[in-house]
Image 1 (cartoon, rainbow, N blue to C red):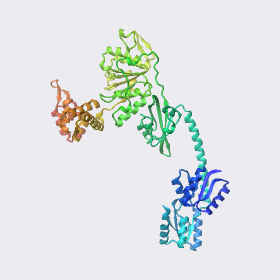
Image 2: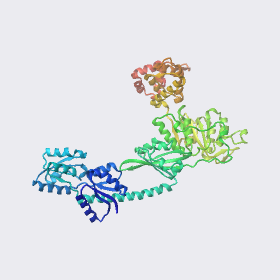
Image 3: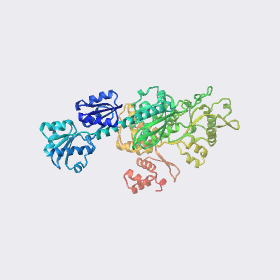
Image 4: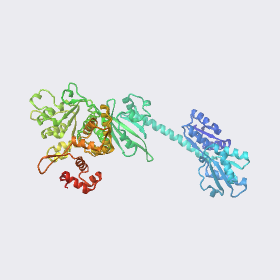
Length: 635
């Protein structure tokens, strides 16, 4: 017996349905006549009895679909069945070309196109939206001059009351047969889907990888046993929640990229309760639309420090890496791209090179990479190469020197099973560059006049404020170390490339120091424009210090353009060499400072500088000559 219920409005249609069932040799769970007012109640009862598909027609089908979450197969009247009704109407009216009005819901018919030409009558269709509209539409049909009305139970009742010719829309065996075949097919598909789901559930539960399924709104639809164990929560406590609410630190921007079709593959890393996971995501695409994504999570084996090995905390410069990606303050598109790269690089054991000027959050990036890497449980050793002489570099990094031969206190040894972060790596001596390359890449260490092979698992993160490629050409940096470092490079943009970020952080820092010093300093739009145009070589570090000074020394509640220009010139005067005298000259004029900044920003393109200043290129040329800043730009 099929788990199907056939609910019909009249006994005559039920008889047709019984004939179809007998011919098809099909048994259904329920076959009954129901009233429109009771259709939803009857449908609920059959569903509770185990029915999985309902066959109904017209208003009853619409009401059941709106009220219950169950597949409903409708029985639209076929063109052939309508033709029989038209022939019957012609015999009743004794007219070869009558005018007939059909008052019904649109879902009652397979098609009404070209029926009038096909069967020789004038068709007037009156679409029902609500059952209460029936009386008005019947009246309108009579006013329009129809000879006969075809409709459902309500339509025929009203026509009978006023004595107007009408016919009931009979659903014939053809419509019932089509609906039954479709319902049986739907049941078969549901069984197949149930079987497939059981197979997928088995696959998910036996997988050694964590699997997360999300919908198009980044809400969790399913997780497997591995994810449940990692979270320490059952599936019921995570289903329906946004993925970033359950998995803190996951990169939702990239997930949105695959859900929108911008990216075909997503790869990142994040941690669940100190377990680092490498995540690979792929979209679920159906019929040209992205309905969700599958995230496969692979456990990353963490570096384990052997018992008895020296702790990195004993070395000066060692500290706990406390920062993570959510500590990065900047929010620009380019910074988000850098974070995405950093997440991808985190699961590698090879060196990462971070290029960025002062104040571009290089240290935070380095700590975040460490905290999302297999080395997370090990030490994080931070060494600034610029603070050490060449001899001190050898001593600190490699343990050179007689006093260091008896105990392993080198930074590379102390960083075992962890990360060594070399700040300003471009300041390493060429000798130390060579020793570092051999140690990190080949695991070869200089020991008493020879190179010794040692297994010392250390992750190197290096950063610099200068482009290493330029230093290589100048002979100041080793080519082999450069190529080894540059494979996994993150280039942090200076804040001057992101004027909207300058504006945002100016507001943040002014609010911070207004609160700290109980002041109420505001900044004008023109003054903000000056801030946006300034070079900010020190990036966030310089911008924050400047905003503090601005709050502390402002004499008016609202800071205007002139005060910002004067303070910039006072704190950060532009210097150049006077070719005539060889002396260092400082530009004290705010306008000269602005031209210097704009020429730097637009790489010497005077047309763009003139447009920014709203002056002609000729005027700009004269001003550059007047201030003596044209020599560098061939003016």
